[in-house]
Image (tube, rainbow, N blue to C red; front, side, top):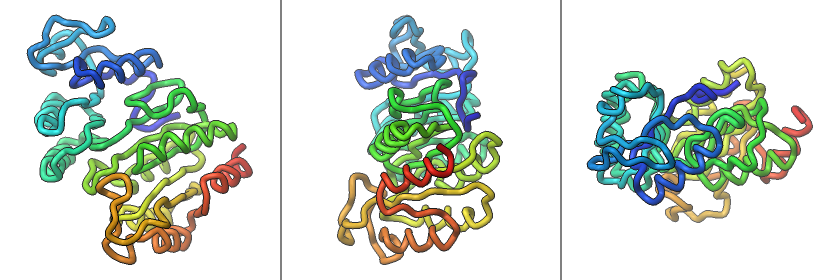
Length: 288
């Protein structure tokens, strides 16, 4: 099974005519994702790989039905694009854009929560339910279908672990890069709740990193879970005050460091691996 996306998900691409939006659309379409329309103001009447382009989502709704949007617009336009998706009743919005102003994210996150819209990102590499749907660029060549969910703040780690698990023959139900910013649409604990409720996900991989308190919040829920959670925390060598990769990964206090997070997750009942290969080996023993 899968969370949030599957083979029935119908997708629109906001920013489809930009260089990155076009390349990502080609990859998603080739994977089999149902992309029904693209949105690019002022470009109505064009098509991208046979996908019709509209000026607005409201205009596209006159011709198509869709459930989800993926956003490839510049940071200064992201708030407007996300709010447009929310106002037009999309249930899922994945934001690939990096550099979105934090106050913009705080605003559309609050609006989305009120409307029951699930926001992935910003600064997300996307998500994949192998063999069913790809939104973004999360390692479609390596992802095997299976029963292990994967949650990661880091896009690079998402790709690396999907590839690693695939090399061990471990399949994925859904893998999601939740976004690397300090403020994102949904925190790890909210994805854990979805995986815990999914009858065909048997275990969850949580990839965390230094900075923030998101893993500590997740640990409280892990204590209540029936399914086993396997964790890896990146950034053990990063000095305090130094950013690692993206804005969400910076240590301001001892509690935000890698070792503190490892201890808290382990005390909650998660298996905490010291290396990626150790995590894959333990998963292989349990579910291979």
